[in-house]
Image (cartoon, rainbow, N blue to C red; front, side, top):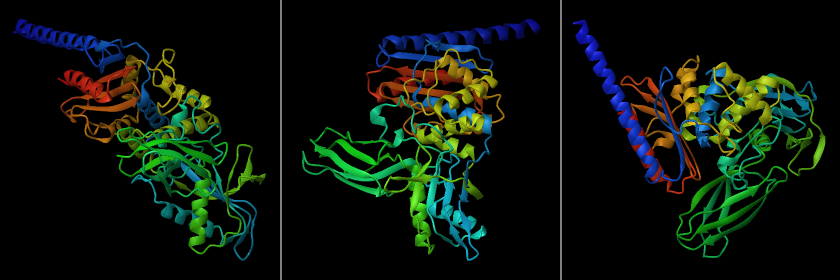
Length: 486
């Protein structure tokens, strides 16, 4: 009997090795087939003990695109905990008179909450948030304001975006950055429609209002079949923006979202409007704080130095785990960058990118990972200065299993049919993964699941420098991933 059991064990082991070898050969065959032939691609699959099961060029460093968000969200959840909430303070300068008049300014003190004014179902509606802020003012004895509403985003130092982001990304909704106070994910919506070929496109700002922004329309209606190449070119150096590019005559009217470089000022403007619309007296308008610490109104002429407000209360964001879930499901760059900036601020009190990456590296080392073979630049993956190998990403996914925040992290990773995987045709009960895409880049990393839905293997599949259509690359990657499940 003992000999028989040994024989069965040996047979099972041999069959497992045979299956593994068969899959490895099938994977390698793709190197000479389109659409992967000629591109740079790597694959690593490991079991829960860290043994490589299948691999192709697993140590090669590549741009991970939005697979970078798996690292950002996981590290933030490990560092802060799933129930962490961003705080937004309400404070004032000056004095409150006996009749309830504030002779001074009200400050909205940003703490990095990326959901203020956002469209997401988890975010508070602006009116509900403003009601809470007004309640804090009333509880402090303030009934009218002889001063300004000041949006204070200065808790996050440094530039709004990473310096390596592509120039034409900076004006897009996915290329917007922010400081510690935002509004509507620092985006602006415009209605766009074609006119006659060669004529300017119809271009109307819908929400939010930005009265200080000078906007010029240099977008033209292109010939049928030429698509949509509209970009908004804008900067936080001056309140000026230009629409450039073309919109084909056969395109239907649509809503385009572009970058708003003045999130703190927009937040102050909308709270100021809400106060006035609900009967409050506010005599001083609205303002934000420029890089030199001066108050700046809608005319963009610096006034006096910003004060040191006395905080009277605060509101909190949704739980970090809920924001992280949207970040990975929707691949939200703005949320991911807010996570990274918050880590830098919490660790050192400085939220410039270099400090943020140092803070993140401390957490990664705490998880047992080495960093000498990778390069991390931003939090979202929009930078092409991020370089990660499939093997490192797989090791990271395995390391996250030891984190107290793992269950929360696992819940943020979409399954086929969800979020950015809505068109991926695979068994959703057997795999969860994060997508990542840029021009010539398509990546999937995540976990292969057992029959009970628990992680069985970790994998990372990165492709770079492809000239094939993304749909063709996706089809090939899905075929390979399906082999790994089987």
